[in-house]
Image (cartoon, rainbow, N blue to C red; front, side, top):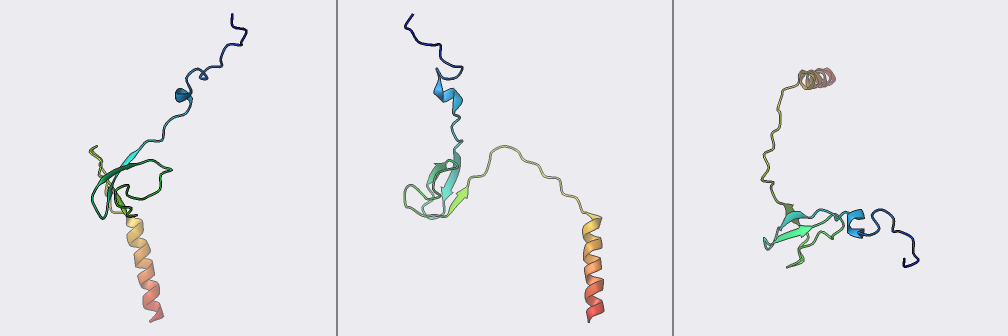
Length: 87
């Protein structure tokens, strides 16, 4: 025995306890270089220092459902009637 207590769960591997922030792919608005930024990184191109970055489009299929809502039509109709009364 080396005289010490057994390590706590997760203490043997500190990288297992702290998860790394995921890096997201951004494209510089000036030079077009691809940059990978995490949540705490400053929003700045690493090549030219430009501060406008565009998030790269995902390759994953994303589907949105578009419906017309009757409540929107009713609300806009009510606003129109109120506006016409003011004239």
